[in-house]
Image 1: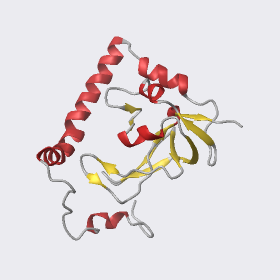
Image 2: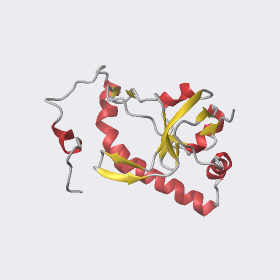
Image 3: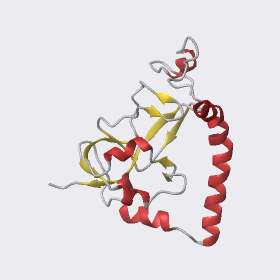
Image 4: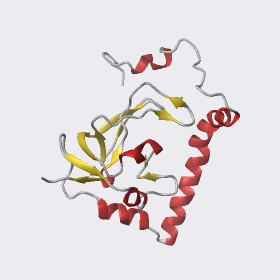
Length: 175
């Protein structure tokens, strides 16, 4: 991608004028921040690969079977009214890393279980700012006014990114 006209992406590394100090400076918080990148890039990646290979060798597909049972027959479209499934239903689809097909179920998402929401859009692409690549996705839904407020490891964030929801975690409401 060479033409970035109208896109803020090339400016992201230049946005800040200095390091932002975390809200709370605890020893545990500092250790989490220090280890976050190597953990996610190397250790967690290796653990996931080992987990999925061992599942394939054992023939264990309970998590994916549960997800297939919850997959919608008709795709979601903008404006659809949906119910976020219960914690138990969602947890039955998650692997030990609290993910389904690479999409994490974050602690901030618990509060929406069992609630009615409206679909903002079904995603097809998103910009992954970790490697500045445009990624294709299927089965990922954005819900109106459901945004991320930050993470425990990095603290509060004012960016207001939408949370990604797997379609298996949602149920269409027909009226």
